[in-house]
Length: 87
Ligand code: HEC
Image (cartoon, rainbow, N blue to C red; front, side, top):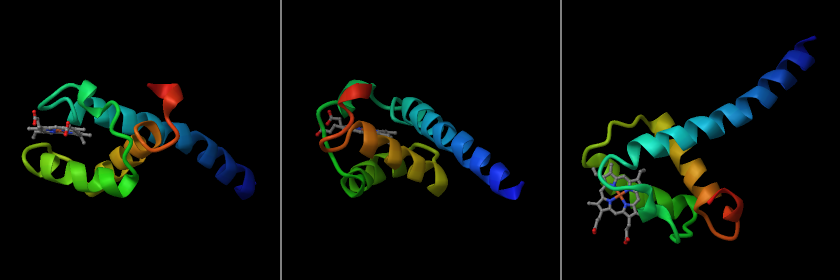
């Protein structure tokens, strides 16, 4: 039964984390400007990290865990090649 529980936990956690990332971006990244700024950037996760680090350190209260979810969301929705579907 542990196997089933773990499977269910993973299945539930994936969309939850994605949703959390989306919410975080909607809250944190609209702190100083709107989300139109994010469109057309097409950056990788590492590029997004460099990009957002400066902006976030200037004022947005974000933990490392939250930043990680933000970067995952940005990379898959505003990243290279992928992400057309969610724009
Ligand atoms: C503390 C304020 C602040 C926060 C929070 C913030 N930004 Fe920004 N952002 C700025 C400023 C200031 C600019 C530059 C505006 C300009 O040059 O006109 C900018 C510009 C941008 C640009 C456009 C850069 C360009 O060259 O056109 C992107 C993309 C961006 N931000 C992404 C994000 C993302 C993603 C987040 C959330 C993780 C975020 N920002 C959170 C202040 C912030």
